[in-house]
Length: 140
Image (cartoon, rainbow, N blue to C red; front, side):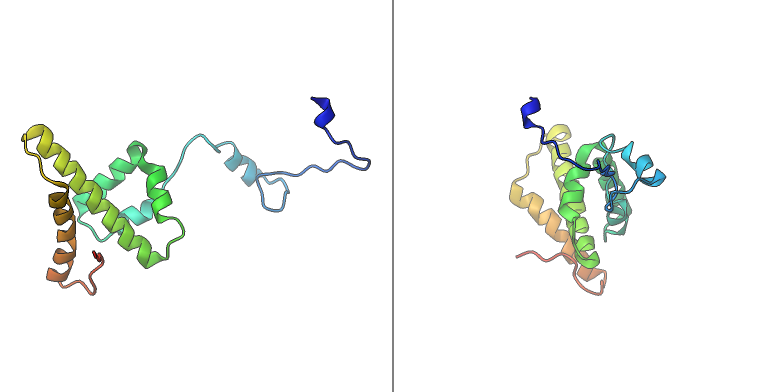
């Protein structure tokens, strides 16, 4: 095991890996203690989605129950307007999948995937009917 260690002559250098410049700060130490302990998500995208309140709350609760990584990865690096559009689409998609699940469990009804997609597409029609400045969901 020691044969893999490369010894060099000269002064040792200590680099703090929790900052970009390698210098220790109390702030970086504070943040370092939480690394890996929890995963946060971009809640702003949830609340700014062009969706009804009940749908935004549903999505927020869903993400709190273990969907953080999915939510963050899907919205990472997007421009503000695109992020809002995608958050809206994800919100209504999750909502309608949940509603379909409830119809199957509690009402013994089984809709087709096309029916669920049609319900999601309804969002676009609602936005146009409500005189939204621009339709925010585009389906091909």
